[in-house]
Length: 499
Image 1 (cartoon, rainbow, N blue to C red):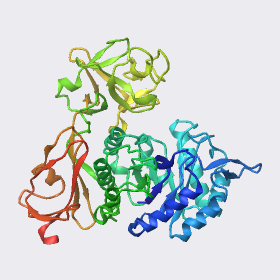
Image 2 (image 1 turned 60 degrees about the horizontal axis):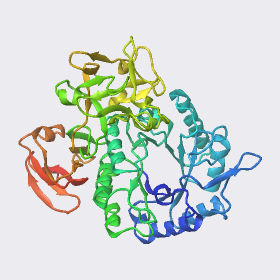
Image 3 (image 1 turned 45 degrees about the vertical axis):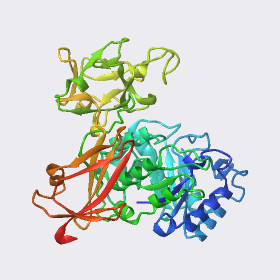
Image 4 (image 1 turned 180 degrees about the vertical axis):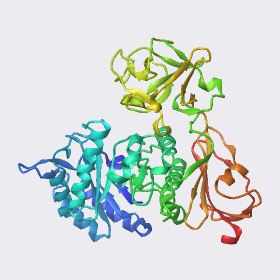
């Protein structure tokens, strides 16, 4: 898994996105010891490119990067690091800079000639049709491979449907939205929980960037949440790309990102992504929005959906004011406070992202774009309607007021705690206890939890705390007090004879 720095949440498209700041960041990666523990990529995100020459060659912004990207790559390489760049498979990048559609070959050749060793390709101004997206990413993959240079290829399509073919298209693939907030970090954890089977050495699910603070001292998440995200990204075998200020990084965040024991979990050669052992999809329970998922039909309070209240096409959860909602008019389906005035992301006085209809063939169709609600991969999202696809066939029980798909009920998430585990190459397991609720609570990994890791009830275990560097004996039952609002604890669990 790659480790390094990404410019986006630190610099975005401000005037600080320039070659002097990037060079200073590269210097700081070395000076602060991040390079020594494997953070070797310095990745430019959007807004480095300005246009194309008449022959189609892309060029950098002459004001922000007057020396050019090749010169910057040489500087970064002189520090023992690698330079990465950003593009888009559409006509433009998300920031309105030149995209790569129709220019894949010349862009790949240009990047290789400059000495670029990482390419992130976004999906703005591009078709969201699956096959078209796969074809266009395949064009950049083939063009990069044709250069003969070892260039890491990162797909940024923001959807879980990239995971099944992801390994054939690139080295990593984004599986969810931008993690701009703690809530979105949780969203991506929930999405990635259903995708572990697609990760393997050489190809990884990407739940987005590591968050700390920007050069303006803005924090998107707390320092505690930064550490918990780092723990979870290591369990999830995700790329570790710090998108925050390295020049002015705090001692606490630096300690977080340089913990070699946690990094070794992330880099474990077995390459198995971690799994959720205890709990369901996470929800902070302090907000009135969150994920929906399928589960056994045994919790009416979380599984009752009432049609046409408070407006036609709305689906309200029980007696609450929470409606089924296409999140930000994208693809993920969540629950969210019903909006009945002023309009939504669908437009002024438009509420189509909250309105659905059930067709005669069982499709639950969003009025937003006539796409169907699907449970593919365990993630509830809207997708192109496909005849015969059982992931898209729903049944509404008018008596019980439940929505069922493949015998399971659509359910509002309410787990504030989880236990996650990841099998490691030496036979041990890395384990994370996490609490996203508002208060400190006890979190337990019981006999069943340990049994999922292959430890029977009589096993004698050695447990190492990867942050406190403490070791203690345990039997397969462990209860810990975990702080609220994103607290966590991380351990390595080994049979005593193998320790």
